[in-house]
Image (cartoon, rainbow, N blue to C red; front, top):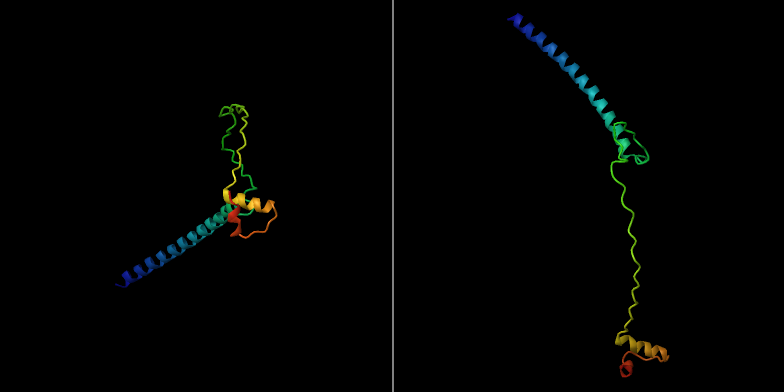
Length: 114
């Protein structure tokens, strides 16, 4: 019975040591991944992210893959006649009064309407 207790105790201690080693390994991996994430965030979201050119030697070149577009067609110039401005009737009265330099109220302008 004592022998079983000591065996269980040693198994328990070895499991604790393995667990501690695994926790340390995972902590190092988490720190490395956090550092990598910070670097990617600086590359993508920093103030100068648009100024940086990241050269990728594996990226292909698009030059020469597509044919050149045809030159733009010449469009003929068309003259459009100007439209005549039509003045509404209520404006004609105001213009008539202003041209004759008469200061008339709104009520008295009704007698000058066409």
